[in-house]
Length: 201
Image (cartoon, rainbow, N blue to C red; front, side, top):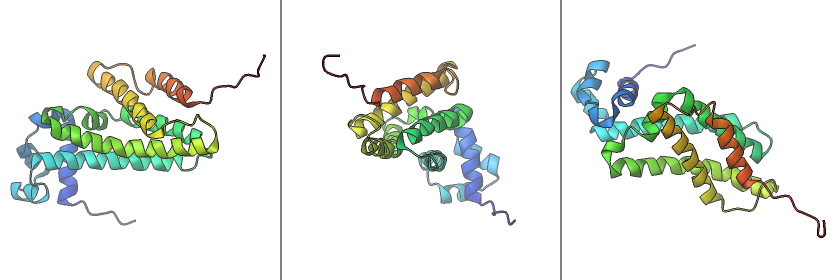
């Protein structure tokens, strides 16, 4: 089996991911990346002309990996409702087990101000599309209420974001333990069809 060559860009991305997760955007320095990777400063700026570009590249890379993992995990599930449940599990497991990833995607760029918020909205929109696709399919299958799936997908993301961010700042509740059953129960119950009652019953 031939191993892929590790490029200078790969080394920079790996070091940047660890450094940004540890220090946040503001306190991480490009000189630290140079020291960690032994890539020249010129080589670093050739690949990433600014610290902001590097940080956003790391965010994109992490989001790509998570979206790919979710799509792969849910692809074998037989129904849209089941895919939604598995997608929730996958996201919570991924963020709960990989704290650096969660910190980078959710909180470590706040010192950047509006630029970070704009990037975060862009990435969240990708996850919202993923949720919306399965909500739409669940509506088509008749397994959930006929709801506004776009708004619902963002509500789901907001709930996940708040729970994971609380855990990052306070250490609880764990996304993979205490939070998971509560989130799944509330989010899935909110879209299920209400039982119909017979007139006069």
